[in-house]
Image (cartoon, rainbow, N blue to C red; front, side, top):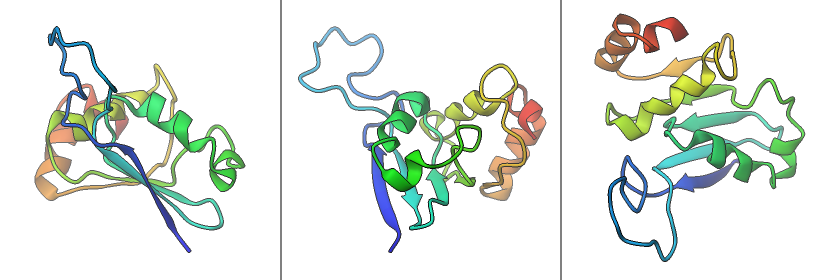
Length: 124
């Protein structure tokens, strides 16, 4: 059976928001999910700016932890164009993870935005 893990549940900037002077009772990262198949295949739903901390949470899942470090996700699905749903893609770039061949599913409008604008266009 596939498992769905909620990696983050706050609005795009997490909670508390940047610039807030409130001290958080419990900080929350930006909305993101990961679907993990029994064989360890993964689908990341939304690449939040908090992807590094969120991916670390998955290391407690044995089928995920057994994956090779160079392949954290088999695919990415972006649900919409709010900054908290795609800005984590920068972590897949050459200066960070240097991923290659990870499919990304999105709307045609979002695909056009990503392919037509840096730094996103460098990821395609």
